[in-house]
Every structure is written in structure tokens, then in C-alpha cells.
Amino acid sequence: MGYPAYYTLYGGAPPARAGVRHATVVPYGAYVCGDGNPGPPLGARPKAMERLLHHRLREASVGSTIRASIPPASPREPRAILEPLIEASFAPHDRAEINRRLEAADIPFGDLNTIAQFLEHPQLSARDRWRTVDSPAGPLQALLPPFSLEDTDLVMGDIPAVGAHTDAILSSIGYSSDEIARLRQAGAV
Image 1 (cartoon, rainbow, N blue to C red):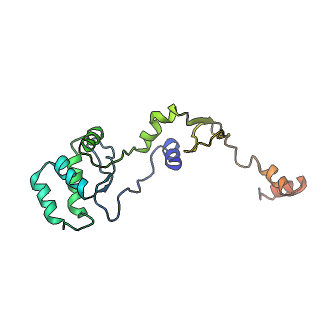
Image 2 (cartoon, one colour):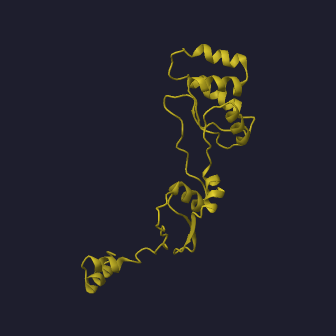
Image 3 (cartoon, helix red, strand yellow):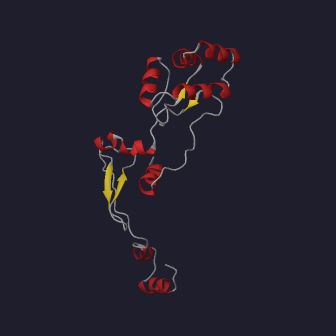
């Protein structure tokens, strides 16, 4: 989440969604809820699909239409029929209600946050994942990497200005002070 988090935090808007739908399994992916939040990603297989039809869509005619269009041995359900029905059934409800109903129906799903919801998630603070680092633009909030190493503190250093370490790097690879000065005069560094 590093790149999209910083893009959103400091760019003002999240990057465009890349999508979470599966190319061949349906339903599989996130469907928008009535509150505009991404719904929980579904990964329903045949038995779960029956529960979805029964508990979520709650319309016998819809369920029989879909069942009639799906051959019993078919490994995937027709996207053009199912996805609009799922989206229509999610539309009247917020994400919390959709999650509650899917859990009650024992349908496999996950919870999907927007990048803004991720940035505001209380676990980031509770697990001490934020650091403040200095930069040429002023102090910035930075996230620790998403892993922890036993007995090792992760270092989040300040962000240097462009060229702040040029002389030290050039010296470390053998350039003399005079050669570095000539490179600067020539505009090479």
C-alpha cells in the first residue's frame, strides 16, 4: 500500500483503480455498496453461489433465471447475468450491512478499504506504524514497511534534498575535490 497511500496522502486524490475482478471466476471481486464504498470482495464457488442467490438476492425468479442459465458442470457463472444482479442487490445497503448479511449467509468475502480508509485505519496508529520524517518540503508522515523484523528497529530517516549527498558519493568512488568542482562547474552534477 506504500505507493497508493503516499500518492493519496500527498497528491490529493487516490490513483485510478486497477480492478479486483477475476478473469474467469464469477462472482469474484468487489461490488459497490449503496454508501459508495467498495463492497467486500466475493469469491463464491458453487455452494456459496447458492447461498448468495438464496440469502442475498432473495428473489425466487432471479435465482431460477440464473440457475437455468448455468449448466451444472460449468466452472464459472455468466458474468453478464450475475454481476448486475449482485450490484443491484448491494445498492440499497451500506458496506457494514452487506458484510453482516454475507457473514450470516456464510459466503466467503473479505473487507476492502479505500486508500483514504486505509490511511485512517486505527490499527496503523495502534501498531505504531507512522513516523514523522523531515524533508526539504517540511515534516511528512511516513509508514513503516508492512513487515517487522525480530529484534530490529526499522529506520525511517529524513528525506535529503536533491544532491545533498553528491559530493560524498563521488568521493567514495574515487573522485577528488577538484574533479567534483569541475563536474559542478560543467553542470554535470
